[in-house]
Image (cartoon, rainbow, N blue to C red):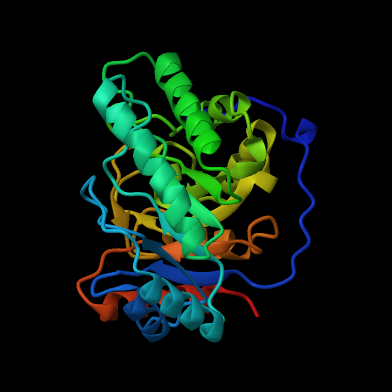
Length: 300
């Protein structure tokens, strides 16, 4: 992906750095929400992400109020924050199939409600796949679906659009596409972005080099605004720059590399953000290793 603008003409958002980047993982809800904080503590999480329901199905069990109360109490006592809820995999607001689109809106509405009940301020959603639809039609469908969901569920949860690698018919790999969704949104105050480092690199933005990182942040700021960036998914890429193949890998062991992540984690425009890792795991050992790596990269 090429960049053809003068960096000196781009505005930069002034951000006051109050702390080092917080690190965490996506934590399983298997066995109930009461297990989440315990699992997060084992991994030394300072922030965390979770599903509020089965991520691979449409039907969901109503939240158990006792479980919710326990979860919220455990979170408060742990000091882990902020909390991010991730949408299931099936919803696709870019789809032109009526039944899928209807179900996707219902799923987003349910996600907004469940996120609020869990006391989390943010809900993350994959931008979507256009399938056979033209890109402008798909982007318009996404915005209309978000607007309808916000009209149905009027709460303060901020919906974060997660950028994609551009695999297959995915939309949202280019910042221009996310910008178009934002431009048509009725309530921009309830929208933000989750930037996945692996997806960004795989989409053609060179986060591995110092110059590439600066150019990426400048373009994001120009098109969307760094004030809309609320979360980083810290994942290395198992595939090459501009591969458009979504393959997460361990921090420092992929194509972004150790020095790439050192710059990302300590960048003055990013250091205030939470960083959630979605790196491969078989058990806690991989998470412990990745946490050790990012903590060692964080400048004191």
